Length: 237
Ligand SMILES: Cc1cc2nc3c(=O)[nH]c(=O)nc-3n(C[C@H](O)[C@H](O)[C@H](O)COP(=O)(O)OP(=O)(O)OC[C@H]3O[C@@H](n4cnc5c(N)ncnc54)[C@H](O)[C@@H]3O)c2cc1C
Image (cartoon, rainbow, N blue to C red):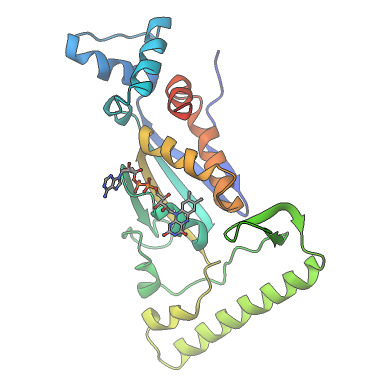
């Protein structure tokens, strides 16, 4: 089966792009078989069995020979903060598109003035009744328009205050403290296959926030054609 390799997918009002990748299902198999001095050029049925065996017996190192690089553009800082919690097998670079590359931790906000770009949800979900952390997917608040207006007013207020503080001569590193978590960030995320699937398992889950679920689902779609058997085996654990 051949599947078209997707490059960019929308995530809310931002996007995720698979900019680079190394390896595929065969790389996992070859990494595992190197101890026997063997190398294959085509994936066979018994290799797919080997992938399942490796996953089910937690022989994880072969799954680290496949690596992906994604650029995330215009993703809210709320989602980025949740992504940053995934630390093992991942590397980040932020600000790639607006200034020279730095590390992920908002150094850009010290050097570069923020643009008035914020994530604005089109629908406001109700608070979950029993799960204090969650929302009720599909259950929109009664006065969605009013909620939207309150949200937009708060954004405008924050951004106006930010600009006023800068005009008063306040340094960027302090003025940015009035910015809301909805500001849009851009970064590069480079991860191993193992770490990516771990992220998908935890974040495309009903306990996770819808916005990061949308990111996890998009990432899943982008990598699926590259190593479908490994992903299936790792997700089944
Ligand atoms: C639904 C949901 C709700 C969450 N809510 C919160 C919250 O309220 N507050 C909050 O702070 N975080 C929260 N998190 C983040 C969560 O605690 C994890 O930090 C995040 O999911 C990353 O998972 P991880 O630690 O497995 O990933 P990584 O840091 O990438 O680690 C990958 C794996 O490496 C191993 N590992 C990593 N570090 C160590 C270590 N020191 N010793 C031994 N083994 C290690 C573990 O097997 C780990 O699973 C939430 C996550 C989810 C999915």
